[in-house]
Length: 269
Length: 306
Image (cartoon, rainbow over all chains, first blue to last red; front, top):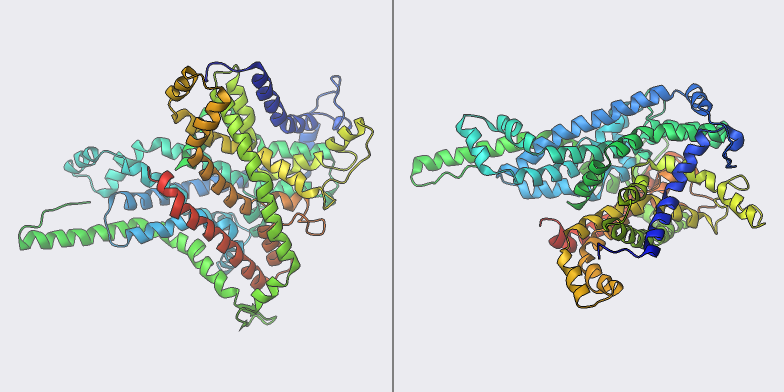
């Protein structure tokens, strides 16, 4: 069945692909042409970067970029450290209560911070962190998903390697760093890609806890910029939209295989 | 971690202190993650339940009201509207995106020319921010000026306020979400298809089975665990997907497109009624827990810890 494909099917597959790309192609068209051509497609339409220049001038997108990069890095580094330590405990230590503790961790896979906005806002306000980048990051730093993925990977590390390191006199943390972490690299890459895309794109929680240019990530900045009340013209909004998604899109085009495999690995477990 | 044989009293004591030391190490490793998990997941869940039983007065003092808020909620037509909308939203998006995902996966799995490009095209919407997607589609649905109405204009039809009319708003959002999600579900089917033995297809074709028959009687049943897995994740997702509402409709017109989480957001941060928002959150948590029980109780025996 893998070999032969009916021509009708091939045409249908391509047609669907073109339909699927159309909204994106449209966004690029509108961003790269003068406003007059936003809805009329003509081959003679002049190309321009004017919309990007205007968007960049009318809102502090440079700052929004910086905020998002800081936010995404902060979350990723925090998640990697916390998940590694916790996964190591679950994978290779036998201790009382580990079953219950693990079940309590898994609870976060079902009830994510995304739905606990009311109480988490209360907590962040009590901590005096409202309108800061750590406020956006804190609820996501401990990731059940990361702990789960790494625990599975650590469990598959051959015991002989661990014994060999122990014979050489390595303690638990040294063994973690020298044996487990290097062997789990594919899992780290998969988790990293999923985490970065998720938090680059995240919107509702940052919208709730931020209120100023200094803390706002790109997504929230885009929403504020594009609000109908601002009366900004359509082509400029599309240019801002393209700017918001460009870094991830470029990364995806460059590392397509890696992305697809990461999402696959991350989702299946 | 250590299995010391306990043959005589002295090693036994050593083994016990070893076990104790082991446990201390494990808990120290867990501590940072545990503190944050408790602070931002477990504690908020309990606090939500507690706050749903109290109301906060203007001077900040809390008064116990028992289940009064739940009574008010049962009498709140917007709550019911949001719940029903969530149901239609899930029903509108999930079966169609799963079916599309399956077709996409079957195509991409073939030795078709340009399958790399096809996979790219189908998957791309997955990596885009929902808020950017909403911006782009908002323009398609703009009355008169937007792409959809321009298309209608070609057929001599007048403009239509797609997002401003209660009869079309939900359909418009559903189409957009299908576009966003189908490619994501595709990769799970793709992974499953790649694990199926090619012998099955060969055997079927030697037996003279048609391709449709092979798919219907062999491939599709073998993909059933994947379908269940994707369906459950899609249901959970459908309760979380509200970003686009903030930009496109704000739940309107007349709450025709509001969803439960969006309503919670509105009640908490626009109407500033955090006790009622807590009551609504309890409903959402109950729904998610029910799905979790279904998933962990039934599905994971087949899928999770292979």
